[in-house]
Length: 472
Image (cartoon, rainbow, N blue to C red; front, side):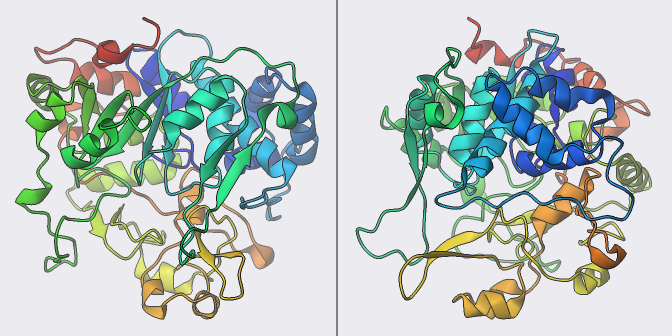
């Protein structure tokens, strides 16, 4: 659901049904800047900017990126600066404002619960992104792609507008060498800031063992868990034990990867099951096992309320209807090294010809890995960048084989591709979950509300967020 698929409209539509609507917090600075450069149809971004608690900061971003009527066709869009260990003031402010805007719009006009989802892997942006979401009143923060051991302390500090810092993992760092990214809220936005409510933290994990590790100490303990299986869309955990591939090149998951639900329930914290859960029967089974409910992504991604470009979405639905849509779990596609689901649509970078013809570059950089340079200092590299550059930075050439630029591809999937010199337009890359069994039960042109209605049509119809309602 990352990078604008679960955008504010979809999260709002789900929250209005009484369930937890979740926006993706990944790359929101790029999405904000590009929406403004496309002219901000409907004025939604500008309306949210008008509510930002530091008006001069919002005004600077509006002046920098807004183009009345949109950038002329064919012209490249103005880039946003990449995050670093010591990001410029504008870079920090843009991340804060972008996350505020998305959550503000998702919460506008109703009192349903709204969360925001981040990746632990993208550490450099996290303090600023989380702070922006909190300024807009986010009810939940969800975090996967790593263990969010430092996030409870970060949320505590930001709720009081206190300075905070987040450790950053640097590949090859010397023993005892520490790196971090810091945020100083009052210096960044000013002293006159509204009181904040600390959101609840839900850690996305792949096993009860990881959940138990986080729950063992109050400094790392989240408020609940999302237990995600290997068929969920986007990234998934690697199989436990030695990696084995099936004849199609997909990772093989075995008995060790089956979640231990009794052990998870024994932790005493609410949890939701995710990945292949989109049916009333699976919801009932989850609750019978002690879960508060289920997390669903793919069904909403294919709904009319989704942020996926509509032409792409219709192609996905058409192929699903005729049985030709098979989502692959590729172990090489993601620069993170985690398996990643791709829908093999022609014209996208899942298409081997498109992938081979696309110029390799890393100009958004969310999945870059910080590494220690031999002479000292920190550099950044990504397996999706030009191979010679990656190798020059100490990376292995074999890591670049098959590696896709997820950042540019996923932004293009929601209709906001970069247009480069010479007329080249970045192709999309679509990710979905591997379970599409819900589709025959939904009407043509279904909405997010239709999905919720279907899921709650069985005997277990209790709203799933009751176990952890931030308004209680």
